Image 1 (tube, rainbow, N blue to C red):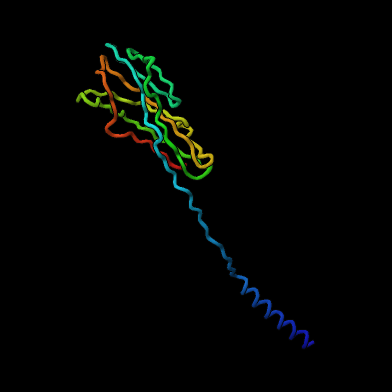
Image 2: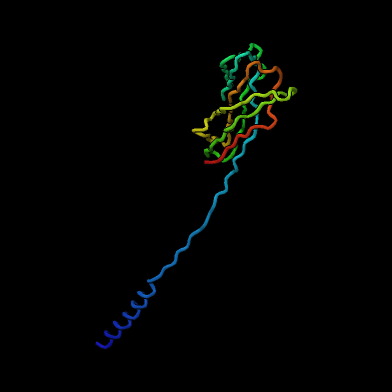
Length: 174
């Protein structure tokens, strides 16, 4: 009987020690990070409204992101269109990532190249893909087309108009 009690006492001490050892535990974890390709944007083509005619009545010439021109007021287009193109950008980055688009919110000034003080304003910029939906970098790239509305004054002086400062188009990963 003493042997059984001694054995029980030894087992109790062993299990009591185990109970104390079970009040804490340790686990390990690994750390990782994924670095993605930075988003980038590069101009492919400048925005060009083409050839237009003014009149004593002010008006607008709009070029859509698809390159379609429409007019209002006293502005008219001619059969000789000149170069007509929306601004085209190439957006590159991580495959299948989405991005947001920011277009100019303030008017962009197009100055007459030889007649100081003569200017027109471009505003109401639109894009394809649209600002509301943003873009998707399928295959790691996407074309971004930008159009705008050009405000033409009454009897706008004839000649070439261009921006002195390029307008910004910004893209950011979502």
